[in-house]
Image (cartoon, rainbow, N blue to C red; front, top):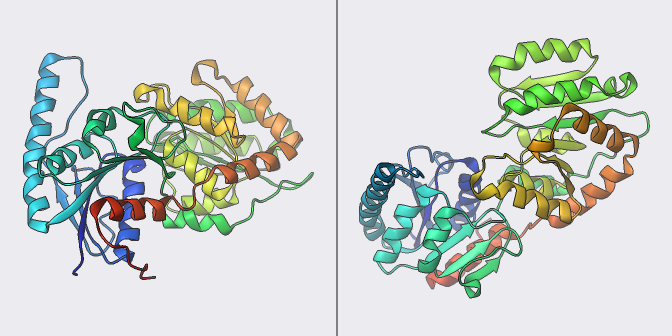
Amino acid sequence: MSGPVIALAAGGTGGHIFPAEALARALLARGCRVLLLTDRRGQGCANLPDIEVIHLAGNAVLSRSLLRKTLSSLALLRGAWQARSPLKAADAKAVVGFGGFASVPPSLAATSLGLPLILHEQNAVLGRANRLLAGRATLLATAFPNVRASDPTKIKRIGNPVRPAVAALRERPYPIPTAEGRLSLLVTGGSQGAKVFDNLVPDALAKLPEALRQRLDLVQQVRAADCAVLAKRYAALGIEATLAPFFQDLPERLAAAQLLIGRAGASTIFELAMAGRPGLLIPYPNAADDHQSANARAFAAGGGGWLIQEAALDAEAISDKLHDLFEAPEQLIEAAKRARAFATPQATDDLAGLTLSVAGIAQAEKNI
C-alpha cells in the first residue's frame, strides 16, 4: 500500500487504544499508511488490515521510588531510541500520541527527528504523559472543553473518537421507559475496581420495591468469581439478569439500555454521549489525577447523567437514585437528550483532518 505514513503512539488500556483505532480507520480511508508504535499491551489495532504494528521494549512505571524512577526513565529512553528506526524507515510524516506512558517513547523519537507531534487527550484533565510531552507538541487535541495546558494556544477541542460500532449507535433512538414496561439497566465495572459494583449493585436492587425489581432487565459486567453467586441472588430477587466478565457485544447492550451504571473513563463518557444514553457515574477513586471525577463532573454539568463519589457510596444511595429515576422516567428521557448533545460525532474526521494538515499532507476525499 502506497501513501504518506502517519505513525500512532498508543498502548495500555482501551481508553487510549480505541481513539487510535478510530483515527487509523479514518487515515486509511484517506489513502494514508498507518504505523502503530505501542507497548506489549497495545493489541487494539491489530485486527485492522494494512497497519504495521511495532512493539517497543520496556514499560515506564510511575513511582516515588528513586530506583523505579531511574529505571522508568531508562525504559523511556530505550523505547525512544528503538522507535527512531521504524519512523525513519517508514518516512513518517507525523506522529499522533494518545497519552499513557506507552505513547512517550515514540513521541520523544518523533521530536528528536524533527517530525510534527500531535497529542490527543481523552480526559478532562491533562494526563501525566501528555503533560510531559505538551511542550514538544505542535498541537494538543482535547476531548473535553476547558482542558488546561501550559500553552493554551496549542489546544484544539475536537472531542473523542469512538469505535465504529459505537458511532453507529447515533442512529438508534433512546428506548423510552413506559409506566409499566421493562426497565433496562446496564452495569459496567471497567478494567479496574469492578468489585464495588459486584457488592453494592445487588444490595441496592434488593432494596427496590418488588414491582420495580420484576420489571428489570439487568445486564452486568461482573468478576468471573462472582458470576454464579450473583446469578442465584438475582434469581431470588426476581430480577432478569445477564451476567458476564466481558461482553463482546457491548455496543448492542448499550443501545438497549435505558440507564448505565459505571465508571467515568473518557471512553465510557463519549460512548454514552454518542449513543444518547444517560449514566449514573461512579468515578474510580484511584484514577491518576482523579481524572474520572473531572470527566463525570463535565458530563453531569451538561445534564447527561449523575455523579456519585465512591466515598459517599452505599446501597441505599444507589437504590434511592434508581427508585427516583424509574418512578419519574422523564428525568431519564431528558438526560438521554442532553447526553446526545454532549457527543462529538465529527471527532474522528476532525482529528484526521488536523493530523494531515499538521503533517503538510493535502487532504484527499475519503475512500468509503
